[in-house]
Image (cartoon, rainbow, N blue to C red; front, top):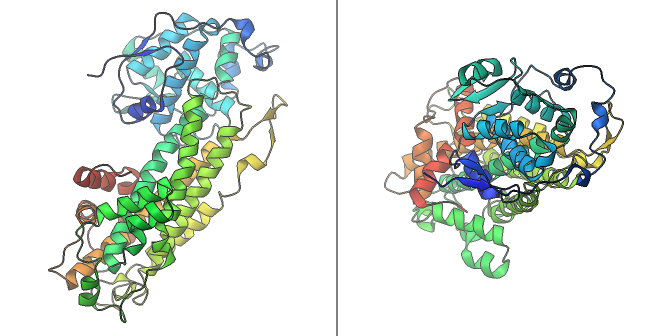
Length: 485
C-alpha cells in the first residue's frame, strides 16, 4: 500500500490528482506543522455580504444557490473538489474549524465522492452544494462503496452528524474555485485519453486503407519540424503499426485498390502528427497552470484557467473535425482505395452499410463546433451580488460537454475503421496488421461485432462510444505495446 500523503496545504501535485482519478490514492494525513493563515491576511473582497443581512439560517442561505435535480457530473469531480478544498483549508486553517477539516478528511479517506448536479451553473452554486453535502443535507447524493446514496442514508450508515458552519467559514468555502479546478483536472485527464485514442483510430484507419506511412517517418518530425508533441504522435502511430504488412507497398499492390504507386494520403491522414500534436500542446498549457492552482486559493475572479479551457475546447473540436473527415473517406471506394462502397460487408443493395452512422458523426461535429466561441470573450456579472465574475466555470462546463461529444465522434471512427480492417483482412487473409492496431481491433471486437447484415445501429454506436469513454481499447493497446505518449 502507498505511504500516506502528508498534506500541508502546499504540496499537492498533478501526479496526486492523477492517482486520485485512477483510484490509486494513498491515505491522507495532515502535516503536524502546517501553515496557518490569520483572517486579517486574507483579501477583503471574499464577499461575506452574500450571507450578511440575511435572517435565514446558514443552511437555508446555501440552499438558495443550489439546484437539487437533473443530471449529475461524474463523481470523480466531486472527489477531486474535496481534495482541493482540504488542501486550501489546511493552508488557511485560521478560517475554518477543526471539525470542518476533519469532516473533509473523513470523506476523502473513505472515498466518499459528492455527486454535484449539472444544473448548478456557477461556482457559487457548485461550492454551496459541496458545502451542503459536507453539512449533511439529506436529499443530496454521494457515491460510496460503488453505489449512489443520499447524504441522509450515508450519514446514518457512518454515524456522522450534521456539521455547523460559521458565516465566515461558509463565505471562505463558497468563494473558492475548487469545483471548476476539479472539472479542469478531470477534463485534462479525459483530453489525454482522447488524444491517445485518436492516434489509435488513425493506426486502424491506416491499416484499413493500406496507408502510406511516410508522413509519420521519424526523420520528418525529429529533424524537419522538431515539435515535441508532433514527434510523440508520429511515434505512437509508428509503434501501433509496427510490422504491419498492410501499410506497405506490397500490401497496396496485393489489394489492388490503387492506380499505380501511392504518393501520399489525404491531409486528414498525413497531417495527423501536426494536428493531434497541437491539441496535446493546448492540454500541456492547461496542465502547467493547474499545477500552480492546486496549491493556491483560486479566486472566482481568476480568468486565466478559463482562457486555457477555451483553448483546449477549440483543440478538441479540431480533433473531432479531422476524425470526421477520415471516417467520411471510408465510405467511398475511391477515397478508401478499394474498400467496398459504404463499407458494406455483404450483399450491397440489401445492406445499407455505414452512411447513416457516419452522418451521425457529421451532425455531432456540427454541435461540437458550436462550442468554439470562447467564453472568455464575454464578461459576466453575478445577478445576485452585482459583481464581476469571470467565465472560468462556464468554460469548464463547456470543455466537459465537448469531451462528451468527441467520445461519440471517435467511437464512430473506431467502429468504421474496424469494419474497414476486417474487410481488408478478408481479401488479404495471409497479411498481418501491426502489433498495436491488431490488438485494438481484437479488443474492439469483444464489444462490437463485424457488420455483415443490416442491424439497428444505435446499440453499436453507444457501445463504441463507451469503449472510447472508458478507455477500453486504449488500455488494451497500452497493455500490449506499452504506454502511449
